[in-house]
Image 1: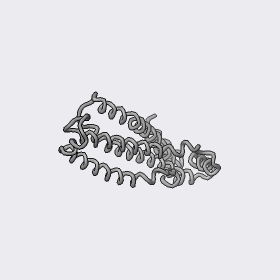
Image 2: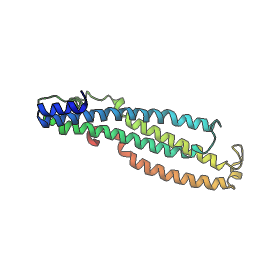
Image 3: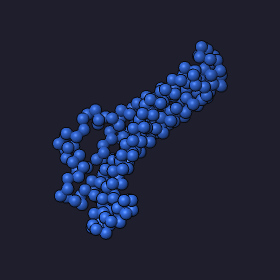
Image 4: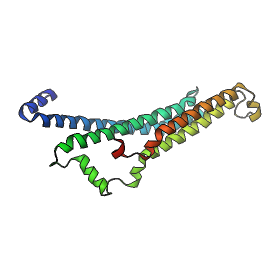
Amino acid sequence: MTDYDRHFKLTETRDHEIVVFEEQYRSLRREILDRQQRRFFIVAGAALGIPSVSGLKIAGVMEGTFLYIVPLVVVAMSFLFVIEVNGIARAGRFIELRIENQFKNVAGWEHYLKDLKEANELTPSVVKVANSSFLVLMAVYFVFSTIISTSGLWYRDVGVSGDFFEAAQTSGAFWSLIYLVIMSATFIAWTYGMWPHLKFSAETQK
């Protein structure tokens, strides 16, 4: 039976409001699962991919200027992570308020989780800091890659074994300072935007 036929049969034989709620519930649960999968790939890709690429560049295996934009990649990955986490929370909140609340005699999943939370049995402390831990890790990657890139620009014209004051007289020193200012401003703006999510709460954010 196709999805259309199943939906048509349900519509003809059951209360229309119940059918709508059921379809919304199924759709939102699928969205939550999809977002959870995307969140996993974002975390894995950012936590493992960024240092791997940076390490290859530092070791000289990878050429080019990709390392200079790694801080911006870190910012993008952190925003993607927050988008997925908030999307999961919003979907769960909608299920709780707009679907489960319509059927008081049915113990829904979101209300079950809420009851566990009120009993302080839902979330162990290690899970509570999971979101903030990822964002703190991204901040470390940002700072580390910025320092490496700034140093690379500073010694660009004299080589890594060059004298500090000799390098300060080259154009590389000028561009390294410009780069550092831009990345510092980016870090401040990014930290301001990410700060609320360091204490993320599904109940307040979703």
